[in-house]
Length: 255
Image 1 (cartoon, one colour):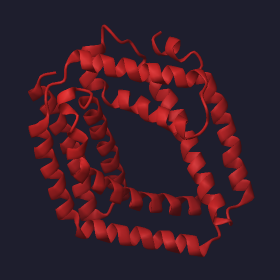
Image 2: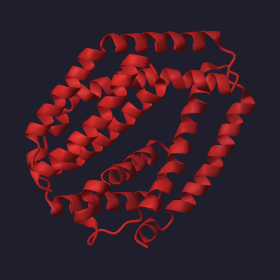
Image 3: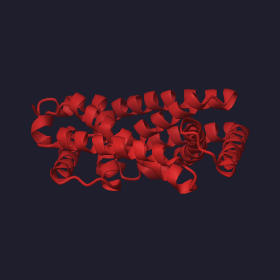
Image 4: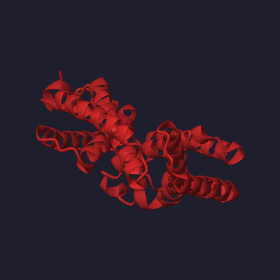
């Protein structure tokens, strides 16, 4: 991809990212915050791919102002999710729910109060990144995809159900998020079934969400035993499904 083409894709992603953060600052709507975080992940995925080009290796440093806003949004999002978990599983722990509510309220207030500054920092990051971007060669894209697929194939040959599985999901999403800008480079050289990858990462994502819920409920010491066991049983079934889906990974990927 020529420099102008890469810049065009960068600006599209920034636009999709800035709209929800502006809306959240105005409304405090949690779905807007969620969409902001999704778009940040997509933008970061593009920069990771671009950084595979030697002249682009500095790009993630230029991305730091966006990461700071992403981190602040994550703290708010975690408190929101924890409150939803407490409600869903009837968690009888006033100290926990009160603390999460305080974290949520203070986080939202701080984010909104600093909203103009955060948006300004994001805009500056866009200008810097646009200026510092260089072209992305097709060979670089192909090598990036092939290297990630080799790593995933090795992992899924003997998968383990710990943080490494979550990291494998991140690699899958990295390839899926970049598929649009990579398609011309890989279409005749690196074949893969995007639907298969998406199905696999969804199963891993559900497994990871359940693990976080178990940790949260068990960590309070007041989570209902039945609720925790239901989540553990559900995860046992998900682990079987993930093993089945990921078995013979490369053959399924390239069928």
